[in-house]
Amino acid sequence: MIIATGEDDISWRRGFVVCLPARPTAAQLIRQAKVREGSYAAQIVTSLYDRLFRWSLDLGADYARYYRLEYESFEEYLAKRLNFDEDVCSAIAAQEPRGSVMIHATPGFAFLDDENGDELLSALLEPRRTT
Image (cartoon, rainbow, N blue to C red):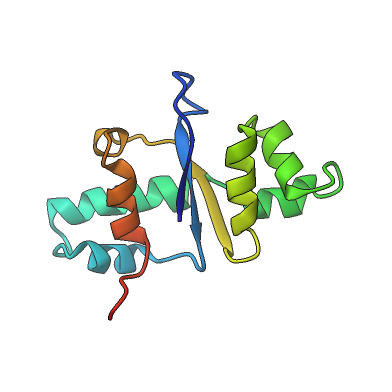
């Protein structure tokens, strides 16, 4: 699940939280994107992977490692430490039991800033359902 964290012009607030059951590998993202390894598209997907999973804040790990004693709940941590709106905090906190990975990231890519950015990320990060 992808949750938008704000639409402000302040860069650290404009972003999203990616909640996943497990951290994918770069190779899994390349396969999910259906691009050829070694291609320019694969380089873009790898850069996106790095931005999301190497250079962004893992909220669950950050809370557990540094802030569990300071804040009474994960939701309070989100509100006070990251200054997220109440509805955003509730949406993220609701994912906590299900998601072992909760990454807060800022877009960093123009193709994620437009109105279809969330859909693109969902298609890339969330497992495809077979019916």
